[in-house]
Length: 155
Image (cartoon, rainbow, N blue to C red; front, side, top):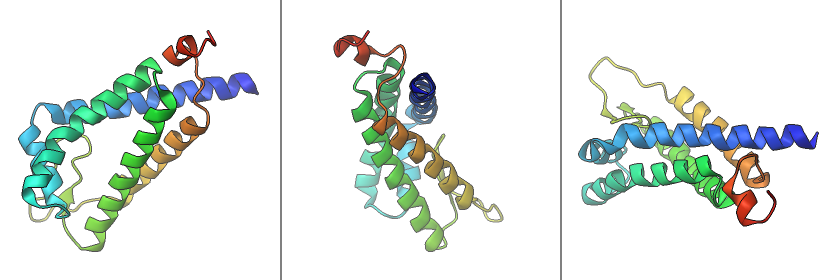
């Protein structure tokens, strides 16, 4: 059973790394658009939304790198989990307020064109699933092919 848990945690680590790499990379080429996407949530003043939007892709890419390498795995899982909680709350807030936006989770989002309808349920369901993966990894940070194993002397 320990082997299954070890490989499950490895899959969780690598899966989260891919998700955050795709999310970060899809936004890093248009930081202004990423700022507009954050602003579409109408939770922050425009100037702060621009800063958050410009910084968020780099945070996601750094998390992806840490997770891919298996370096500071527990810390990376905790930060990923915290970000996912924020994402879930932000999407739920937009849904509750009746706004019609693209979440911008995997690219530049923002206000939707008239007639387009967001699917917040699936955005939240996806993020809840990813949150469960992050929590599992937080509780089970030991993985295969991880820099942490060498740093902690477990290789």
